[in-house]
Image 1: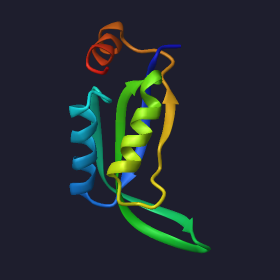
Image 2 (image 1 turned 90 degrees about the horizontal axis):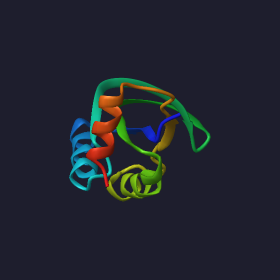
Image 3 (image 1 turned 120 degrees about the vertical axis):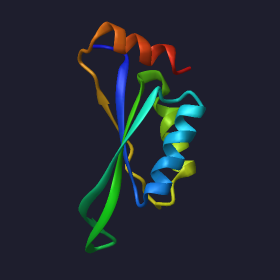
Length: 105
């Protein structure tokens, strides 16, 4: 197991996804954020089934920064309940994992 983590969130527009990504990298909460465009999400919200086009953010960070990443996502996001889940990175290239560690604080 490594200290590297990937945090997932979605945004309702490309502009919002970019705003969140830039803020996380500028604040050194993420070494990199990939934005995957044009996802179709189907979900239940307030008792109804909804469909939305969203942008997925893959946030490269470290375990000890998750609380700060989660708080920043909540602060920057337009959703009432933004997705924010952390996935463990079991292994990776030492160089890449080192790069993540060097670029967050």
